[in-house]
Length: 203
Image (tube, rainbow, N blue to C red; front, side, top):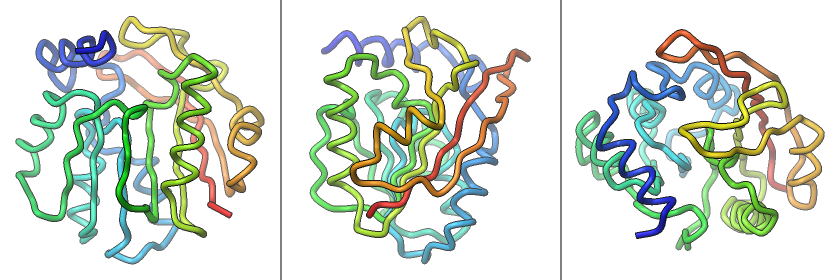
């Protein structure tokens, strides 16, 4: 088991939902961005680094029927299954994002707080290539990371901070930026984290 995987399995074996900083009872910003895209309920949507997020659970309530959740931690996915059940319309994928080899393309790729854990240029480029090859032409990519005024570490790990300009430059070859904004996430233990949200469209 890799050090990365071991770290996240330990987190989800020892901490509840309200004991991790990134938890949102309702992922308001992400859901509003999805609503703005006006996707069909049959759209193929994948949540990268789904962890203990309620994003997919909320999409199920809205009638979306082709959903995937990817996370490096099998334990995190088990906890999500306990919340929503083993529903046929949800594909649970336990793998490191850098090892992911999708067999299909998606209409929407959603990543809140996974990408910023990639700190090496090689890892970042591997992610860029993966997302570029995994979204249909005209499809969308919602990415939320720590902003330049956000934390420097999360869960004891180093992260990469991003600005709108930096993200736009990283993904410019295959994506056009549709919108971006910064927001403050209130953690379950009453601290604040600055995030930047971006929406890209695949050319």
